[in-house]
Amino acid sequence: MGSIPTPQPLVLPPGIDAARFDAYIQRAITIVGAENVTVISSSNGNDAASLSKSSYLDPPKAHDMFYVFDKDYFVASAVVAPRGVPEVQAVVRLCNEFAIPVWPFSVGRNVGYGGAAPRVPGSMHCGMEVVLPNGELIRTGMGAMPNPGSAADGKTPDSQPGNRCWQLFNYGFGPYHDGIFSQSNYGIVVKMGMWLMPNPGGYQPYLITFEHDADLPQIVETIRELRLAKSVLQNVPSIRHILLDAAVLGTKESYFPDAKDRPLTEDELVAIQRRLGLGRWNFYGALYGPAIVRDALWHVVQASFGRIAGAKFFQQDVDGSSSKPSPGVLDIRAKTLRGVPSTDELAWVDWLPNGAHLFFSPIAEIAGEAAALQYDITRRRVLEAGFDFFGTFTIGMREMHHIVCLVFDREDPGQRERALRLIRTLIDDCAAHGWGEYRTHLALMDQIADTYSWNDHALLRLSERLKDAVDPNGILAPGKNGVWPSNYNKAEWKLTADSSVKRGL
Image (cartoon, rainbow, N blue to C red):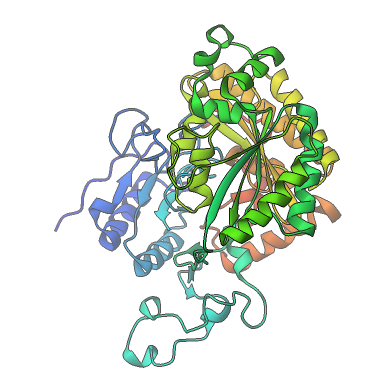
C-alpha cells in the first residue's frame, strides 16, 4: 500500500526538514491510522487542518483559540491521536527516534492558559499509570505492586488491573512520585484514579451577598475562621466580584451600550448590583449532610456572616416548591457544587464581542489584609489598561487562589497587546509582594518561572536536572512552565516582554 502524501505544515518542528517530517508522519500513520493523524497546514478554512476552531465545546487541538500572540505563533505541526496506551508509548518512542517534540494534552480546554497549543511551535500533539518520555509505562504509589495473578494471565502491563489498594493510598513506598507529573513535562498520564464523594444524605446550596468593596477583608477573615478553625464550610468557597456574575447573565452592551470602549464606572457597577439583586461580592457555598446537620451549619454560617453589615442570605430551592429563579448564578453554581458539570457559566467570556480571556492566578494567604491588597493592585492595573475587572477568590484550607479574568476582544490587535502587557505587569507587581502564580499562559511561563528565584533559581535548576534525566532527548513538552531540556538553548527560546508576538521574528 502506498504512503499518503503529507501536506506541508504551517510550522515544521525545530531542526526538522520537510522530508524528515514526511517520514515521521508516514510512520505515525502506521501506528494510529491515517484518520488519527492531522497535519496543520492552513491558517484559514473550516477543516481540522486549519486554525479556525474557537468553540469551547469543540476546542481546537493545534492552537490557542484565545490567542494573545498571533494566531499562528503557538501552533502544532500535526495532531496525533493514539487509541490506547500502547499507541501512546509507540508515538513517544517515535518522537524520540526522530527528535521531534511532542506536547501532550487531553481535550484542549485549558483556555485562558493556552488551550491545546504547544509552547514550542511545530511540536507534535497527542491526546491523554504514566508513559515516560522514553515510552516506558509506570504506575505510581501502591500501583507499583502488581495485581497477583495478572502477569501470569499473559496480560500486557497496560491491560493488567490494579491491585486492591492502588488508588486508596497514593504515597505508596519510598519517594512520592505523583507530584512530579502535575504541570510537568516528565511523562504523559494515561490513567488516573478519582476519589468520589458518597451521597452525604442531603445538600443545600446558598448565596450570601455583600454590598461594598470594603467588605472583602471581613468576608475573608470570616471564611478563614469557618473553614480552617471550625470546619463549618465543607466545600471550596468562592467569593465572586459582581461583574463575573453580571457577565454570565448578559453582555456589556446589554447593560450599558455606550460603555463598549471604556471600563464601567462605580455608579454603573452599583446600578448592575441593584438590577440583579446582588452585592459587590457574592459568596457561593453549599451544606452537605442530613437535615439536622445542614440546619446546624446554616445557623453558624448566618450568625458569622451576619456580623457584616448589609449581608443578605439566599438558599436555592432544591425541592422544586418555588418557580422563582435564584438570584445571580446560584442555580448554575448549585450544579457545580453538587458535582454536575455545566457550560452555562462560560457565558462571561462573551462580555465583549469576540470574547477571549487570560487568567491571572496568584496564590495568597487567607487573610483579609492580603485579599484587600491583592484586589487593589489587580483592579487598579486592569482599569489602567482599559478593561473591566472580573475576579474571584477561591479559598483552600491554607491558601486562596485569586483568579483574575482578563477579558478582551481577540480580533482587536490593540486589545490583545494591552492584555498581554497587563498580565506581564501583574506578574511583576505580585512578585514584588511575595505572591506567585500557580499556572499561566504559554507566553508567560518563562516570566513566572523566573519569579521563583530563591537561591539562584535552585528549584528550577532541580527541575531541569530531572528533565534531562527522564527525557535526555528533550522531546516531551520542552519549555512547559519554564523547564527547558539542556538540548534547547534557553536564551533563544525564552519569551520576554521584548519578544515579538509574530512567528519567525
